[in-house]
Image (cartoon, rainbow, N blue to C red):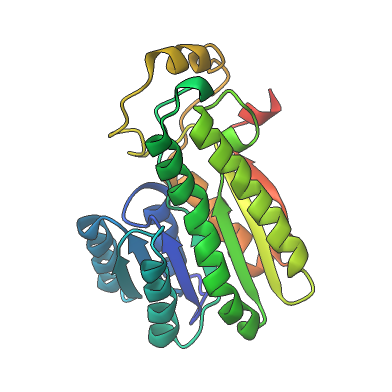
Length: 253
Protein backbone atom coordinates (compact mmCIF):
# COMPACT_ATOMS: atom_id res chain seq x y z
CA UNK A 1 0.00 0.00 0.00
CA UNK A 2 1.28 3.45 -0.94
CA UNK A 3 1.41 5.57 2.22
CA UNK A 4 2.81 8.85 0.91
CA UNK A 5 -0.08 10.80 2.48
CA UNK A 6 -0.17 8.81 5.71
CA UNK A 7 -1.93 10.80 8.43
CA UNK A 8 -2.37 13.95 6.33
CA UNK A 9 -5.68 15.80 6.38
CA UNK A 10 -7.04 16.42 2.88
CA UNK A 11 -10.13 18.35 1.78
CA UNK A 12 -11.58 17.54 -1.64
CA UNK A 13 -14.56 19.56 -2.86
CA UNK A 14 -17.03 18.16 -5.33
CA UNK A 15 -15.89 14.74 -4.13
CA UNK A 16 -19.26 13.04 -4.41
CA UNK A 17 -18.73 12.24 -8.10
CA UNK A 18 -16.42 12.51 -11.08
CA UNK A 19 -12.89 13.84 -10.72
CA UNK A 20 -13.42 14.77 -7.07
CA UNK A 21 -14.58 11.27 -6.18
CA UNK A 22 -11.61 9.72 -7.97
CA UNK A 23 -9.22 12.10 -6.21
CA UNK A 24 -10.71 11.43 -2.77
CA UNK A 25 -10.38 7.67 -3.26
CA UNK A 26 -6.83 8.02 -4.55
CA UNK A 27 -5.76 10.17 -1.58
CA UNK A 28 -7.37 7.72 0.84
CA UNK A 29 -5.64 4.76 -0.80
CA UNK A 30 -2.35 6.52 -0.02
CA UNK A 31 -3.09 6.98 3.66
CA UNK A 32 -4.77 10.40 3.71
CA UNK A 33 -7.68 11.24 5.96
CA UNK A 34 -10.17 12.80 3.60
CA UNK A 35 -12.97 15.30 4.05
CA UNK A 36 -15.51 15.03 1.26
CA UNK A 37 -17.31 18.30 0.60
CA UNK A 38 -20.25 18.22 -1.77
CA UNK A 39 -23.76 19.55 -2.20
CA UNK A 40 -25.02 16.03 -2.95
CA UNK A 41 -25.39 14.02 0.28
CA UNK A 42 -25.96 10.68 -1.45
CA UNK A 43 -22.78 10.84 -3.51
CA UNK A 44 -20.68 12.21 -0.65
CA UNK A 45 -21.80 9.57 1.83
CA UNK A 46 -21.23 6.80 -0.72
CA UNK A 47 -17.62 7.89 -1.22
CA UNK A 48 -17.06 8.17 2.54
CA UNK A 49 -18.45 4.69 3.07
CA UNK A 50 -16.20 3.30 0.32
CA UNK A 51 -13.14 4.86 1.96
CA UNK A 52 -14.05 3.59 5.41
CA UNK A 53 -14.85 0.12 4.09
CA UNK A 54 -11.27 0.00 2.82
CA UNK A 55 -9.92 0.91 6.25
CA UNK A 56 -9.53 4.64 5.64
CA UNK A 57 -10.83 7.69 7.44
CA UNK A 58 -13.39 10.01 5.90
CA UNK A 59 -15.68 12.82 6.94
CA UNK A 60 -18.36 14.63 4.97
CA UNK A 61 -19.69 18.18 4.88
CA UNK A 62 -22.78 18.76 2.80
CA UNK A 63 -23.66 22.21 1.55
CA UNK A 64 -23.20 25.02 -0.93
CA UNK A 65 -19.50 25.86 -1.02
CA UNK A 66 -20.22 29.41 -2.14
CA UNK A 67 -21.77 29.97 1.30
CA UNK A 68 -19.24 31.17 3.90
CA UNK A 69 -20.96 29.08 6.57
CA UNK A 70 -20.33 25.89 4.60
CA UNK A 71 -16.74 26.93 3.97
CA UNK A 72 -16.18 27.50 7.68
CA UNK A 73 -17.74 24.13 8.47
CA UNK A 74 -15.47 22.37 5.96
CA UNK A 75 -12.26 23.80 7.40
CA UNK A 76 -13.31 23.48 11.04
CA UNK A 77 -14.44 19.87 10.58
CA UNK A 78 -11.20 18.92 8.82
CA UNK A 79 -8.98 20.46 11.47
CA UNK A 80 -11.00 19.11 14.40
CA UNK A 81 -11.29 15.63 12.89
CA UNK A 82 -7.76 15.22 11.55
CA UNK A 83 -5.77 17.52 13.83
CA UNK A 84 -4.44 19.56 10.93
CA UNK A 85 -4.99 20.35 7.28
CA UNK A 86 -2.30 19.50 4.71
CA UNK A 87 -4.03 19.61 1.33
CA UNK A 88 -6.94 21.52 -0.18
CA UNK A 89 -8.34 20.43 -3.54
CA UNK A 90 -10.74 23.01 -5.00
CA UNK A 91 -12.49 20.77 -7.48
CA UNK A 92 -16.22 21.52 -7.25
CA UNK A 93 -17.66 23.31 -10.24
CA UNK A 94 -20.56 23.64 -12.63
CA UNK A 95 -20.87 24.20 -16.36
CA UNK A 96 -22.58 27.11 -18.04
CA UNK A 97 -24.98 26.81 -20.97
CA UNK A 98 -22.36 27.69 -23.60
CA UNK A 99 -23.96 31.13 -23.71
CA UNK A 100 -22.22 33.99 -25.51
CA UNK A 101 -21.56 37.26 -23.68
CA UNK A 102 -24.52 39.16 -25.16
CA UNK A 103 -26.95 36.51 -23.96
CA UNK A 104 -25.61 35.57 -20.52
CA UNK A 105 -28.25 36.24 -17.88
CA UNK A 106 -27.37 37.82 -14.56
CA UNK A 107 -28.49 34.62 -12.84
CA UNK A 108 -26.22 32.37 -14.91
CA UNK A 109 -23.23 34.70 -14.55
CA UNK A 110 -23.59 35.03 -10.79
CA UNK A 111 -24.18 31.32 -10.19
CA UNK A 112 -21.25 30.10 -12.30
CA UNK A 113 -18.79 32.70 -11.01
CA UNK A 114 -19.83 32.18 -7.40
CA UNK A 115 -19.48 28.39 -7.47
CA UNK A 116 -16.49 28.10 -9.81
CA UNK A 117 -14.41 31.05 -8.62
CA UNK A 118 -15.71 32.65 -5.43
CA UNK A 119 -16.06 29.32 -3.59
CA UNK A 120 -12.41 28.31 -4.26
CA UNK A 121 -11.31 31.76 -3.11
CA UNK A 122 -13.32 31.48 0.11
CA UNK A 123 -11.97 28.00 0.80
CA UNK A 124 -8.41 29.03 0.04
CA UNK A 125 -8.68 32.02 2.34
CA UNK A 126 -10.12 29.91 5.16
CA UNK A 127 -7.64 27.05 4.74
CA UNK A 128 -4.43 29.06 4.36
CA UNK A 129 -3.81 29.75 8.09
CA UNK A 130 -3.94 26.01 8.75
CA UNK A 131 -1.82 25.09 5.74
CA UNK A 132 0.76 27.68 6.78
CA UNK A 133 0.77 26.34 10.32
CA UNK A 134 1.44 22.86 8.99
CA UNK A 135 4.44 24.20 7.09
CA UNK A 136 4.13 21.87 4.13
CA UNK A 137 0.75 22.55 2.59
CA UNK A 138 -0.54 22.16 -0.94
CA UNK A 139 -3.52 23.54 -2.83
CA UNK A 140 -4.62 22.07 -6.15
CA UNK A 141 -7.30 23.89 -8.12
CA UNK A 142 -9.31 22.35 -10.94
CA UNK A 143 -9.27 24.77 -13.85
CA UNK A 144 -10.19 23.55 -17.32
CA UNK A 145 -9.19 23.58 -20.94
CA UNK A 146 -11.50 26.60 -20.94
CA UNK A 147 -8.91 28.39 -18.80
CA UNK A 148 -6.41 28.13 -21.66
CA UNK A 149 -8.56 29.24 -24.58
CA UNK A 150 -11.83 30.96 -25.46
CA UNK A 151 -13.37 28.14 -27.46
CA UNK A 152 -14.06 25.41 -24.92
CA UNK A 153 -17.19 26.72 -23.15
CA UNK A 154 -19.50 29.69 -22.80
CA UNK A 155 -18.56 33.09 -21.44
CA UNK A 156 -19.35 32.58 -17.74
CA UNK A 157 -17.54 29.26 -17.44
CA UNK A 158 -14.56 30.47 -19.45
CA UNK A 159 -14.18 33.58 -17.32
CA UNK A 160 -14.53 31.58 -14.10
CA UNK A 161 -11.78 29.17 -15.10
CA UNK A 162 -9.45 31.94 -16.28
CA UNK A 163 -10.03 33.39 -12.83
CA UNK A 164 -8.96 30.11 -11.23
CA UNK A 165 -5.61 30.44 -13.00
CA UNK A 166 -5.23 33.94 -11.58
CA UNK A 167 -6.11 32.72 -8.09
CA UNK A 168 -3.61 29.89 -8.45
CA UNK A 169 -0.71 32.04 -9.61
CA UNK A 170 -1.32 34.91 -7.20
CA UNK A 171 -1.59 32.62 -4.19
CA UNK A 172 1.49 30.67 -5.28
CA UNK A 173 3.55 33.86 -5.42
CA UNK A 174 2.27 35.23 -2.12
CA UNK A 175 3.10 32.09 -0.15
CA UNK A 176 6.03 30.59 -2.07
CA UNK A 177 8.43 31.20 0.82
CA UNK A 178 6.06 30.08 3.55
CA UNK A 179 5.69 26.39 2.78
CA UNK A 180 2.50 26.35 0.73
CA UNK A 181 2.48 25.27 -2.91
CA UNK A 182 -0.43 26.15 -5.21
CA UNK A 183 -1.02 24.57 -8.60
CA UNK A 184 -3.86 23.86 -11.00
CA UNK A 185 -4.85 21.14 -13.40
CA UNK A 186 -6.60 21.96 -16.68
CA UNK A 187 -8.66 18.94 -17.71
CA UNK A 188 -9.86 18.48 -21.24
CA UNK A 189 -12.76 16.24 -22.15
CA UNK A 190 -13.46 13.95 -19.21
CA UNK A 191 -16.08 11.30 -18.51
CA UNK A 192 -18.06 13.00 -15.72
CA UNK A 193 -21.66 14.05 -15.11
CA UNK A 194 -20.95 17.80 -15.07
CA UNK A 195 -23.06 18.46 -18.19
CA UNK A 196 -26.00 16.22 -17.24
CA UNK A 197 -28.21 19.06 -15.97
CA UNK A 198 -27.12 21.71 -18.47
CA UNK A 199 -29.45 23.01 -21.18
CA UNK A 200 -27.20 24.30 -23.95
CA UNK A 201 -27.68 27.63 -25.65
CA UNK A 202 -28.04 26.69 -29.32
CA UNK A 203 -26.18 29.69 -30.71
CA UNK A 204 -23.27 29.47 -28.29
CA UNK A 205 -22.98 25.71 -28.61
CA UNK A 206 -22.89 25.93 -32.40
CA UNK A 207 -20.04 28.47 -32.28
CA UNK A 208 -17.99 26.55 -29.72
CA UNK A 209 -18.70 23.28 -31.51
CA UNK A 210 -16.69 24.43 -34.53
CA UNK A 211 -13.51 24.23 -32.45
CA UNK A 212 -14.04 20.88 -30.77
CA UNK A 213 -12.46 18.59 -33.38
CA UNK A 214 -9.17 18.55 -31.43
CA UNK A 215 -10.64 17.39 -28.13
CA UNK A 216 -9.47 13.81 -28.69
CA UNK A 217 -10.58 10.95 -26.51
CA UNK A 218 -12.37 11.55 -23.24
CA UNK A 219 -10.26 10.90 -20.16
CA UNK A 220 -11.41 8.74 -17.29
CA UNK A 221 -11.88 10.68 -14.07
CA UNK A 222 -9.12 8.58 -12.51
CA UNK A 223 -6.59 9.83 -15.06
CA UNK A 224 -7.30 13.44 -14.13
CA UNK A 225 -7.32 12.65 -10.41
CA UNK A 226 -3.85 11.13 -10.73
CA UNK A 227 -2.52 14.55 -11.80
CA UNK A 228 -4.26 16.22 -8.86
CA UNK A 229 -2.72 13.82 -6.36
CA UNK A 230 0.70 14.18 -7.96
CA UNK A 231 0.66 17.98 -7.60
CA UNK A 232 -0.31 17.61 -3.94
CA UNK A 233 2.44 15.07 -3.27
CA UNK A 234 6.04 15.49 -2.15
CA UNK A 235 7.09 14.38 -5.64
CA UNK A 236 5.98 17.85 -6.77
CA UNK A 237 7.80 19.62 -3.94
CA UNK A 238 9.42 22.20 -6.26
CA UNK A 239 6.35 22.84 -8.39
CA UNK A 240 4.19 25.86 -7.59
CA UNK A 241 2.23 28.29 -9.71
CA UNK A 242 1.98 25.71 -12.49
CA UNK A 243 -1.01 24.88 -14.66
CA UNK A 244 -0.88 21.27 -15.83
CA UNK A 245 -3.03 20.40 -18.84
CA UNK A 246 -4.56 16.93 -18.52
CA UNK A 247 -6.13 16.89 -21.95
CA UNK A 248 -4.49 14.28 -24.20
CA UNK A 249 -2.59 17.05 -25.97
CA UNK A 250 -5.56 19.24 -26.83
CA UNK A 251 -3.80 22.36 -25.58
CA UNK A 252 -0.80 21.54 -27.76
CA UNK A 253 -2.81 21.56 -30.99
